[in-house]
Length: 315
Length: 254
Image (cartoon, rainbow over the protein chains, first blue to last red):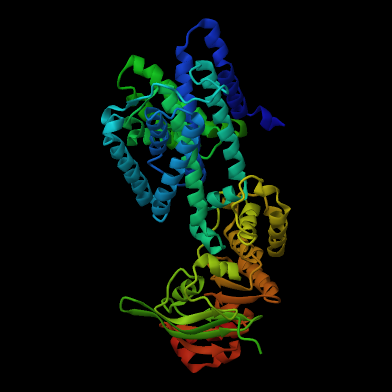
């Protein structure tokens, strides 16, 4: 029972209640900025959650995960520009395109190890970045404005800020739930075993490549969905979304929040983006403060914030 | 009579100028505990690497249970029932002891593209894992995180994981490496108990253990089999004495 009252559970519970009630505050005060900020936070938390599946649990340090954010976004943007605004078409296509990209990239890079793996994922992300830069019809370097958000008939209106926020939050919670089931399943045991000791996994009879590839594709699909959400949120998509520094941000979120912990990416996304928001008002060099903080976490709190909170309880 | 469970025919492997396996031929019939000994650099590790599929031979054939496995990948050999323990402890250190063994069971319980049901709740995986732990004497340590076990316990866990896959044959790569006298004695007792119903290929430096356990011994020197036979024959073999055992032999009679 005492685990129920663990510091980590309290923080996560409070965070979820805060996220759920935020729109109430916003509607009461008429101040919509916090909702815009937190919609962005929730979407990037979804992206970080997807990366955590392969990085935190699977030990696959993908340095090109923002590519899926861009891919999902560009599918929505390009289809919208060509007159196809139905979300029932856009979103499944965004996810399918991400799956396909993940399958190709994964099939090639999962044969490599360590630094080579990181470099190949980065190379593919840079490749698709420059493809987007070269898309003259769709804005090239300047990006593409999306004049109409994805349409879901009478089901939900994404132009409604509160509706859209709740949709993003619901998808984030669903993703966290799915990851929680995945990592405890047979499949999850395999990718975690492969993180721990891939050679041994093969020796006891697992063809680990195909499981890691499946994890890679699942994570890509989730992040592609986050990309579709992000494009709808900003009404805009540009190559900047998949710049390699964006991939770095996702990794920072996971390291800050806690690698291989279910809510770590969410905690990390909230922490990093709030810091960015707060500190960038003080100085444009806000990274100078975030940098040492990250260093501190890496040196003194390997499990990130989620891990430190769990440690409080144990200690 | 049935064919031997493991047949090695004229296995050859060259690393640059060094002939690590110089036409090794060897039979291990079912039920035998067959030990391979040899001085450092004799090619024992290269041999086991080729048996498990981590090193690809330049020539020769390996048959397991009548099937040519010379070019099968590691996981397929494991699926056929060839279980291997590592010379250097190779476990899932951040998993619990029971999770380690359950993973070994899972490897041989159909595919793992099962995404939803908690694996730790599957009796089909946990029960055989507990049984294997009980057999090596680790059942009381089931919920301990693997990194917190002693060296001797790690070696026992290695055996439990090999056992849990329900193998036809064990390849044990120096299971007694780095062990103290007490731990070695316990491991010898465990192997003696295992060999009653298992086929084992044992690579081991501990001569005392080898001569006490083995039904047959093969001596490898410079990638070549210089002798193969019962422990007493090996002890008496002049070539072996000269090439390998030297003056040590006397000690093992005492």
